[in-house]
Length: 302
Image 1: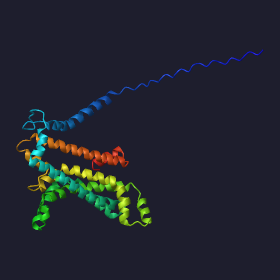
Image 2 (image 1 turned 30 degrees about the horizontal axis):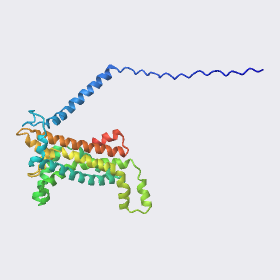
Image 3 (image 1 turned 180 degrees about the vertical axis):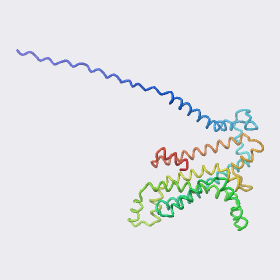
Image 4 (image 1 turned 90 degrees about the horizontal axis):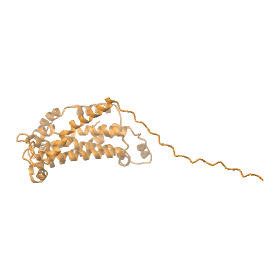
């Protein structure tokens, strides 16, 4: 009689022990550089934190803390001079951004899609506008505006808003041109050629193909132009006229009598507007596929 073959008993499988990864100890130089970097950032951003905290001061002067409150923010609506200065800055920044975006977009598309010897001369002109100190632009704009408004009789150049828009959009046009040209140079013009092969008119090709391709750079240029106009102090101080005092000029005039907490409150509001605009720039460029380095270079105006 055959004996039944005994099956070997399977050993229970023990779970594998997790492998402990030993992190290498950081060198003391890395720790020191990290601490030093934090100290530098705190030093650079401390003035911003101080101005934000000072905006909640209800004292008479900005440098003298009295108590916590929201009186300085309420003063934005209560004081006509303060309110008008903020409104003129926002209005001027918006119009200047529109002008700079329109001119810069057309210039960028022309340089990218109709390249020639003229492009290098035009880029040199834009570079000259970009590197010229603002004080030089301001000194040049003042007699030029007076000549146009008074000597030639073009009364439109006697308006303060028009003067501010012309002065603020001067540098922004170059920034938008750089961004739009860089955006289209990196993309092949095959879509525009395909649109022309399908018997689309040049205007329809521009509206349906070229402009959507350049739209991320156009939006980024508009937002950057707006933020650059908000803090343009030198040109605004030279070309502004009575009745159209922007916010930076108002702050300079307030230095004579002492800065009040309302100045810090408006500065905080301007800071929030700038951060929101830069955040929108980063969002638009991120959705367009730009890397973090490209976004940082765009925000720097490069």
